[in-house]
View 1 (cartoon, one colour):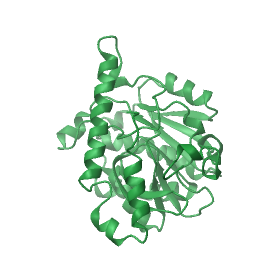
View 2 (cartoon, rainbow, N blue to C red):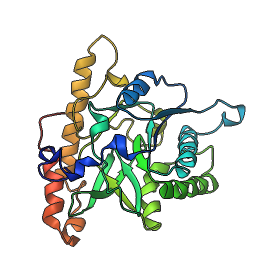
View 3 (spheres, one colour):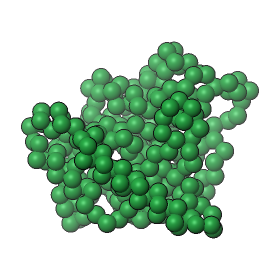
View 4 (cartoon, rainbow, N blue to C red):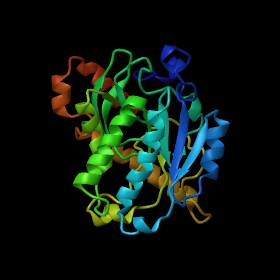
Length: 290
């Protein structure tokens, strides 16, 4: 389900388009991070997985971490542009939920104007919900998402634009520009009913240095995480740390809903289907799972 009783529609038409059947490949982009656990899990779910590991070159020494990250994604976009079906791109610190491969695509695979579809969202906003329950929206962060060959080609243009206007050595929030850039190309971007996994990484000092939040977590998950995130790894209070992080992520998500940051008042008032929007926004939070 994309809306209302999603779980009760598990065998209906919306969920026939499962992730594992709708994608050409999964690229894990990494630098020095371990990826074995993530690779093994995704492979066990039936995905064709490849790790794209960035080389350490002398000419990269002064590049900002944000630009190095963009370079890694750009490599994945180049490969995705050549595929015949959508491609999933995930960062090495993404932790999927159990049953990940059986979850539905968050967009209609028969559309020809799909841009990006986030599987993990950060600061999400809801724009529109179609009659069959697919949600157009905004997210920043490129931890886990799906691109089509067409949108991958456009994202390569964005990467070049960032290189020319911001430069390799300066920090940029390039992932926040993806939605507006692809929408200018007349593509539609999608957010999931609930997050398909968690950003499991440790705080990023570059975010903090640029007055942004050091960490970001999924506001609500589709289910139990497949393995322990890095931020909760270790024997000393790991489970308590995980519960604490997930609890406060839920609190923040509910607060964003109540304060009109997930579904903005102007969007709601200007919608041709406001009840559908409100139902999607509220009902996604009505579950006990953290």
